[in-house]
Structure formats: C-alpha cells, structure tokens
Length: 357
Image (cartoon, rainbow, N blue to C red; front, side):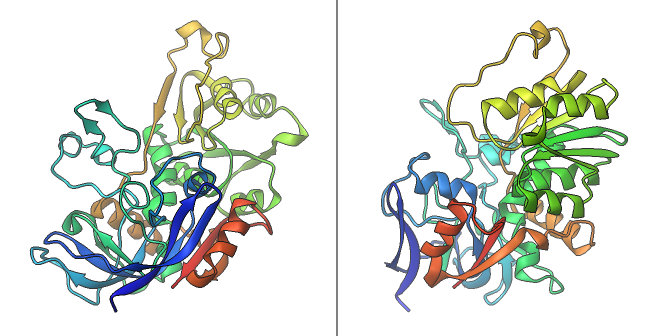
C-alpha cells in the first residue's frame, strides 16, 4: 500500500477524509498501523480555527496500533507488536528532557518558547486519525500493550489519562486531602481518579452535564455539584466547613472556573491548572488574598514517553483505573466527519469516541 486514508485539517470549520501518501520511515522512526484512536477537545479547537495548525495537516494525537515497520536503528521492538505512544513524544535528549520536563521537549527556540513544546502529533507533524502514523524517536515513545488489555482500555493513556493524572500529581495531592475538580469532562474525570489514587479522601466534582456527573460518581467522586443549581464556591465552602480544599484542579480553561478554583482553596492550598486558555486570565485581589495566602498556582502539559505510558497501563491492568466508561461512542475512520460533528456539539451524552480504521 502506497497511500492511506486520513483526517486532514482543510480550513477552519472543515476536517475532511483524504487519501494521503504513506510516510517514509527514518532510522529512528516506527510506522504504526492504527487500530484505535479518538478525538480530543484540542482537535475541536483545531477544527474551529481556535488553535492554529497548517492546512493539510493530519490531525489526532492518541494512537493505539501495531508496528508495521521499524527504522533501521530502532532496537528492542518487533514488527507486529501492539503498542501505544503518548500524545507528547519527547526525544529524550533535549535540554527539557534532561531537566525532567519531557512534555516541554521542543519548546526551546532561539526566539524564546512556544507553547505545547512536546506535542507533535497533529500539531507540528502528521497525526494519527489515519490508517497509519509515523512515530518519531520510537525507542523513547513506544510502549508495548499488555496482552490482557484491549485497545479501548488503554485508549485514554496517550493523553486524557496522562493529563488528568498530571493535574493531581502537579497539585501534590496527599493522603487525607480534599480535592475539588472543576469541569468533569474526560480530563477532569481522570484528574478526579488521579487524586483518589494519590490519597485524597474527599473528591468534589463541579459540572452540570448529567452523563458526566453520573460517570464521576462511578469513578468514586464523593460529592458532585451542579453549578447551574447554585454557587459552587459556597457549596464547597459548606462541604469543607469553611476550611476550603487542599487542591483545586481546573480542567476547562475559562476565567470563571479558574477564579472559582482559586476561591475554594484553603490558605496554603494549590490551584492545579489543566485548562487551555484562549485569552488573558485575571486574578482577583480578594481571591488571591493580595498575594499573602501562601497559595500556589501550577500548570501541566500531558506527560509523554514510554515510561509514562507503561505506568498508566500498569494502573489500568491492576484494576485501579478503569476508564472504559469514558468511551461512549464508536465510529469507523470512514465516518470521521460524523464523529467530529457529534463530539464538537457534545450531543447524545458523548464523552469520548473510539475511531477504528
């Protein structure tokens, strides 16, 4: 096969299915035949023209697949092996990687920094909503999938699970903590589960979509607040007897959720921000206690690399992280445009879609 079908960004408002040439495999690359992938909220930002990428780019950044061909210098893998690769594909040898910030690999330039440095699939290189995807730096990024796990069981690992868990990790959740998660989309749900795994004994979720709130309860969220029925800040203050939460995780990327997350912190608490913001943020003087509250504001970009993927799949394999409920709809790659229409408009209780070539 010399050509493949792929979902391509044509222009704002249009992602279309096209026939594209098969990628050439370099010495350190691996060619994956995609078995399952999905659509991310960031892909919707691309579709709408809110996040700029070049026209003609193949989109998508969450691959599960089979190794079709290995580069001449790739060792430790074999063709026919089932693997995943993270949405972030670090090289392993940049300054950022050697500082331990693998997600920022590629952010350093001669002219400062660019956002989402290590995010290449569907951003700076062709992505994986296609029949095949080329994985750069394969030995740093390919993680074998355990035989007891299905594609859908590991589908959240490349991005959503890694990002959500990073929110809890960056917030340094501790045993006995109370954690509030603002926005229970797929990332927020994973953040809630990550907080639970790190030792939080009370997790509070804030949303208004019934399907999301139902899944949150299945994942062990203790209290679910519908922000349309009252002030979530007041509700969280009441639930914590006025103390506030140890960690607030913001998983939407709006001024209101950021501000609410700041307002529910206890003195010395941490706001862990996962949202992608499209404009300047304002920090209210009172919520910030004029800078005297010993609070922390931290941000996270989805950690990638094969060791991160191995750890996440170990959590799934152990039974401690069951995220299959997040896959609510399934489409063939041939129906990718219909899948985008459903997902972008958040119809029919959709959380995540599984796309199979």
